[in-house]
Length: 388
Ligand code: PLP
Image (cartoon, rainbow, N blue to C red; front, side):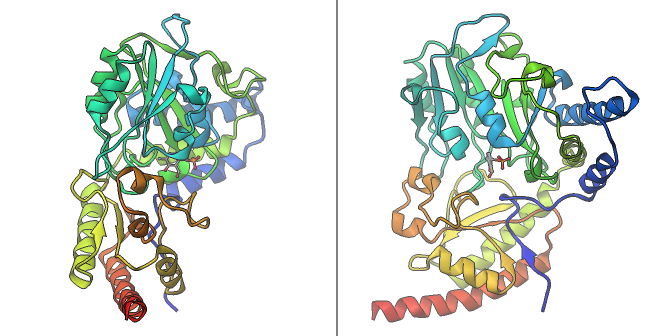
């Protein structure tokens, strides 16, 4: 039997060798990073080295990086009315988020539900900047959260343009950049992001670490006045609790490695995969095809083929793909991203997401297409039988 083929990098990327080595080295250490003795200082050194690499990945200052347990926590930490800029303690009055955000953003973090507004996207899954502008006109001190690239469709959002609109309206911009590192640029200054979220396991680090990064914005330094987890003064009193040194060290090593992107390689494979899908199944719909997308992501559906059936068939053939986001697969519920794009529930039920990575090969794509030809042939025959 051939080895498994992993095409679900957006759910969790394989651990990079550099990250594995860093985790293993850190696990050999004894000591709490807050302790002043040599053991504690050794643990602290690993954390600070990782902080430097994470900051470098997004063009920020190390002092502005707060380590968390992952992106869900980083998003929740960021989305608070208690964001102070240069000592200005007035609370943020509203939170505007695009309708295609990850659930940890969509739920509004620590804002009251009544203060959260969803901004629509167009049929290609790109946020409607005119709608954003109109919503901002109704706010005094807004916080806006817009992801850099969508985890389901891979559609890249116009973050730079949004930042200009948000700042002109006296707002701050938080960017969930979880799916970007190693694929597209995520420099905070170039994007105009004031706050940015990263997750270790999406960029080749271990599960269980993430970061919220702040930038000295046009309004001055940002201070999160209400930490999510209070206790000891770790992470400059922004996130209490003894740091997970090994997970953070792994994140740092992965962040260093992710500074080298291999987008052209991934885009070539993704294009071959999509060309193969179209050649074998002309009625295939590729979501967000008209928009700028991540080089590694394809989300598609064929009318009449259910995603759960396709997923099981792929899995039995040794191939891991996903339906919509990993959080919703297993529960088989319609993707909120596709719903926001105006995709019919019937077509959305067939949405399969393929996400590859830097170590994927042309042979992997061939194998995927071979399985697709077999399974789509039999599923389409089944569909014809039902229709007859
Ligand atoms: N944001 C985006 C865009 C994601 O894709 C995910 C994970 O799927 C998350 C946030 C949550 O990440 P974590 O697993 O680190 O909590």
